Length: 281
Ligand code: AMP
Image 1 (tube, helix red, strand yellow):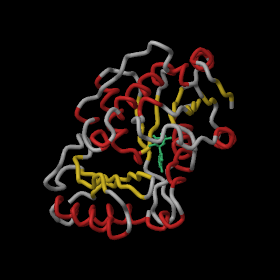
Image 2 (cartoon, rainbow, N blue to C red; image 1 turned 45 degrees about the vertical axis):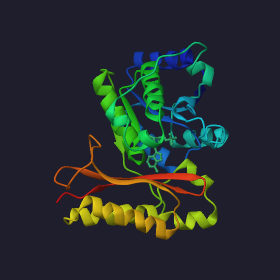
Image 3 (cartoon, rainbow, N blue to C red; image 1 turned 30 degrees about the horizontal axis):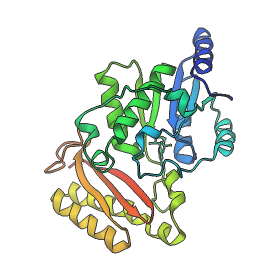
């Protein structure tokens, strides 16, 4: 595995691979890598002959009072693990390589980025759309791989790529979970042992809501029950627990179209997000 830090080196490597007839896959991450990330790398390896991972903690997707400065950074373990998974190239740009002085252009996706996490984290999806656009145009991969763990992010990226004609195929990979159901996340490192013991309630609640709505339950009533269950289990503020159209993320009255339960809730200083699909009626 070769590690590069400049856009020029990234493009030189990819140009050589293109000349040799390789196909290129890209897996953007913010590092502090875990098995969820490695599932994306494996998916990518099966889909393209060269897999490029990126590690960049993107300042433009963090709000002023969020955890940009304290976000976990474990670069040398990440490099070892990416090598072991068979990644060909790691791109690890600095903030000034990605955002040189004077940068000002932003990509805004519209309604998909303004609901759910977009309401609670203003500017978050504009930061994501901007950095993902930049990475896609820097590498021009055939395929880019993202996790369903960040379901809204995946829909935002799919919409954006369609809307502005970025020539790449977007692949989504199912969420990788701990045996007790907790979705793997770099931010789980913020949980104390007592909070970690409460965390499985999130997946349990959204699954039970999904099941109830699949059986004909009213989405609003079941969502309210889910929120109560989270609070009873020991979660702090529940930012949202809601049923949405799986593609547009607009509220639904039933599960007659593909539907997703999405939730975000606080546990100590960690804000956990998770989602599941509602089985068709
Ligand atoms: P992050 O480093 O948190 O920005 O995540 C980088 C990519 O890994 C995103 O596409 C995430 O959706 C994906 N990802 C994070 N956690 C998981 C997980 N538990 N299962 C599958 N994909 C994940």
